[in-house]
Image (cartoon, rainbow, N blue to C red; front, side, top):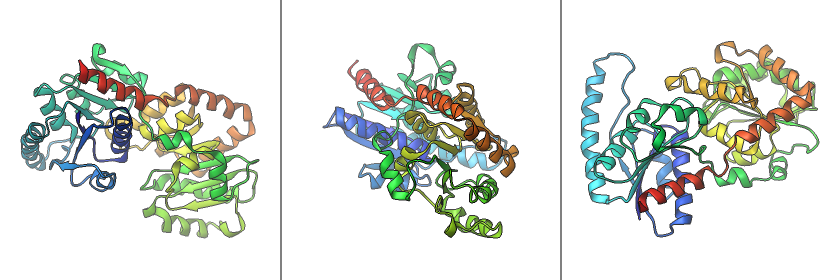
Length: 369
């Protein structure tokens, strides 16, 4: 069985694709995979490290307003379609999967027009334009959220949830506590703005951590993002935060073992990317969500609102984020333990830990038919 997988640009598109590949390999051990991405996206670094054959298509997304540069990008898109047809013709796929990003467009379209069974996996509440277009050509659609189903043809769409790494489900709380030297009898707040960090969130955390150093009954693990770490350490020093005397507060540039960190978290302060939310809900972790305001189609705000409506999270818009606002919400949640417990239950109810298996079975089934 030959399977083309395409997803690019951000980790939110790439990691679900890799999770699906790993799941399919367990179900179909002799399956051959080809990953198609771009040279510019994170996939060019991540995918080869997985030992996967990797092909690139030279594409760039279009500007959302008229620019002369869009003509150059249109020419690249035409060449990209030609390259996609070449890839499909020579790999002879039995199925093709797209997990998001504009690179999926040409390869899934070429596969579909060649009669290859195709599936797109939409992570967000509001689909991007590429998946909206592809929905009219592909065989099946796996929707990561219930709210996304309404945006696609009903007869080919299934609500599956978003695929998450198996390590997220298997990580043990004790391992996380041991790694970071935290106490088992005090709650842990996990803070992350993503691998690159979120400056607005980091700035808001300065005031929160300044207050938190006086109250060791709550522990904080804050990942600033590599590019923001030095600046954040300077902000904390300028504010008088002495981390050396506050072992219940740890500030790291990056968390290389996020599953362990999640395993010990009683509350998360996160952006609202679909993959991060899928992992939080799979473990039933309540959250304070600060959606990235410049995400395509404003999808992070829609993701966050869905979690808030379900009772699994509280949302603070980026433009409204301050140390005072964030600290107030934290104080409210920790002053009434019942609230956190109810949010955790709602988060767990939203989780779909079996999503990767469900989608993999869909791919196998459509290929047989």
